[in-house]
Image (cartoon, rainbow, N blue to C red; front, side):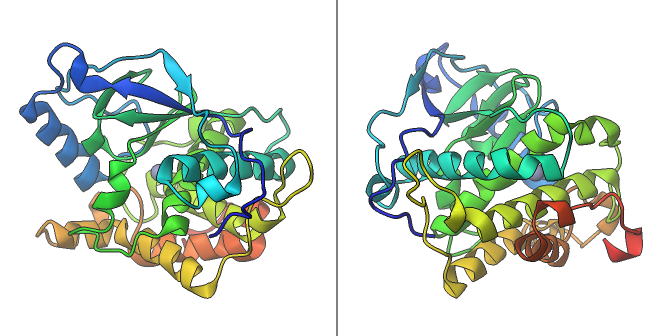
Length: 295
Ligand SMILES: [Zn+2]
């Protein structure tokens, strides 16, 4: 998706955290490999399960992203793209949250980190992949992941909407956390109709809901942040949703497809629930209300 060059994205809440490798000698290669296996093969992207031997990087202080002021900046580099996405996704949820829960919406923290960092869920590295940490209500992304999306085993085009889909998916986990949906789910199980998969498919659905409404989100002066997505851009986001499907990841790592091990859902499920949100909005994202055969 393309930002309106004149929109004011300075209200985004993304912060930058310093380089982790500078602290305590950084992360050992063993730690990196362990976390990579945990995150890529089981697809963990909700904190509380990470750690895996990584040494913690810095916990802060975090710096505001002052160089990202306009939509033109967001169209030019990935840091500003995340800043712009956060402004738009937040504006979307201010309006849409009442269709999901009755309590008050609060904005999550959003940290871009480099190499490694300490979080309320333990140590994270670039290899952890983007994730949401419920205890500190923070989305953590090392934007080098977006380059990984363009390489094997993912091999997606990984365009701007695909990148913002990832941010919107993690934001969806924040919505689940503050609304109590996440607490009610049993995230210990796996399989195609497990609560774990229902949580993930709902986050995909919430991301789709934002994409369809994104061109209506606006800054303080009423300028829309984004232009409507093109067909190619929506296809690009769907391509990313498919690439992170459990069946695709199992195949990409040389495993047999074993649906009983799924934590995020198949490529087909992830694309379908993204589309459900895109067509029906956040209120259509009740993945816990449908029979397992229709999930
Ligand atoms: Zn997720």
